[in-house]
Length: 222
Image (tube, rainbow, N blue to C red; front, top):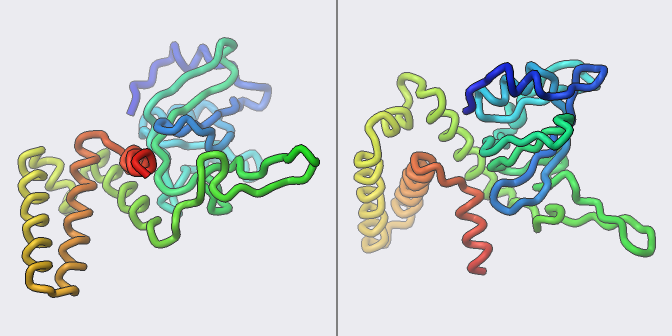
């Protein structure tokens, strides 16, 4: 989340419709994910919440990216260009950016023969495997719990308890996985692995380490 000051907002040059174009870039890989529009209120909400809000020119209303899909964008850095008439947001993309299910909206490439080639996932690579999208959704929920700290949430309890508690739980769950595996109990392994992954993702959020960054590291090793 960012402190909202009139100096930054007043410096922006909105067009005659009160809008400014926004380029959204993956903070880890640098790939361009999408281009959209914001009005002044969308800029303010994005800065205040730390997640992207845009203005729909067709529906004439604000929309929160990922509000229904869970594929939110966590804002890491905000820039405007030299003329202050375009914004650049560097984000951690949870899930996919494109409504067609691709990671980047820019997945249609013009070939030299003039034909259009659809690249799965866009310039950044293949799309997120459907079975793994739950990880992106879980990461988005954990980030939201971290930001809002709603009462009655176990995730809130962990964040409020601090790093030592999170590490203790992570260690306990890792031990539970080992015990289940030694006992050759597949149902218990599945259950305990889910607990282990969840607590690992809470630790990542606590340390401001995104799911995208870990996936990028795995991609680099591959």
